[in-house]
Amino acid sequence: MHGPGDVRVEERPEPTIEKPTDAIIRLAASCICGSDLWSYRGIEQQNGPTPMGHEYAGVVEAIGSAVTSLSVGDFVVGSFFASDNTCSICRSGYQTSCHHREPAAAGGAQAERMRVPLADGTLVATPAMPEAAMIPHLLAASDVLGTGWFGAVAADVRPGGTVAVVGDGAVGLLGVLAARELGAERIIAMSRHAARQELALEFGATHIVTERGDAGVEAIRKLTGGDGADSVIEAVGTHESMWQAIHATKPGGHMGYVGVPHGVSLDGVELFFSHTRIHGGPAPVRRFLPELIERIWSGRIAPGRVFDLEVPLADAAEGYRAMDERRAIKTLLTLS
Ligand SMILES: [Zn+2]
Ligand SMILES: [Zn+2]
Image 1 (cartoon, rainbow, N blue to C red):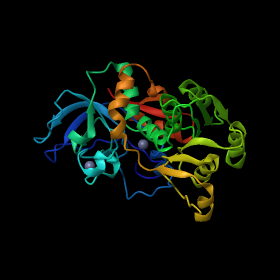
Image 2: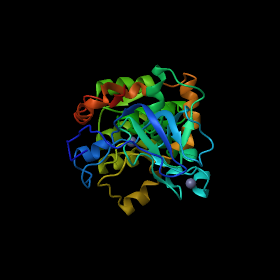
Image 3: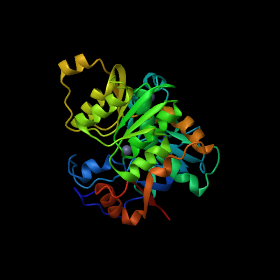
Image 4: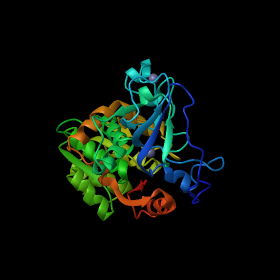
């Protein structure tokens, strides 16, 4: 990305093994994340041209001399932060705060090949080479599914509970799917967009709320006997969506936030009297990858349904435009 709205596909040097713990992978497909739009829209500043993309799945082409758990030819999925998966923080399940964390795709994952640091701790191999039809689902596990899943876990979704989801992007929609998988009984998706409502229902939403802000909160209260939801997943990252989520949570309930905050400020007194338990942050996707891959592999879940536009990597600029204009939920970039 050369600047806001300026995406170009260029030849770059081939990635190489730089450290003995690295792996080089050939991506099976790539994609554009909702969080890439923050810089596309100029809300997040960049220092000059930046390689983009942080979601990936593909085949290991080379490994460093210290990599022991993977072999060349393995099909792998990884998270957007590389982690050793052995330190005390990783062992507690917060790999995105690993003592040795670093971006997994510093050279960009919207590419044909990439270098992944800390390969043993970061990458998870699939049981065998996946069929082509399974690749979008595995790619979704790399971020949007793992992030929606963490949102549901952070919101303490439990069997029989009532869940509300703020945000109808890929992460919010997959938060709906996670809530269903974790046993929620009522799942309220907030969306005013027909195609997204439809996917939310397919993923397990039982109710759709089209109102936003205070009216949206009011609608959720009405559906929950005046209490608010036991669990609320926030998947946007704006000041309005954070407060919408807090206000929609039942006193004593949990709010899980996974939208990257931009311009959010929380008033202490209001927070104090809300009685909301708030947890969130960059999703430790690595914690969930083995079980997510298993659910995908068995055909139980199809998170790749969030990809409603496919363009070749060479047309990445159109993929960004379509997401920016909300013509697409999520763009898959195909590689030949
Ligand atoms: Zn992302
Ligand atoms: Zn660690």
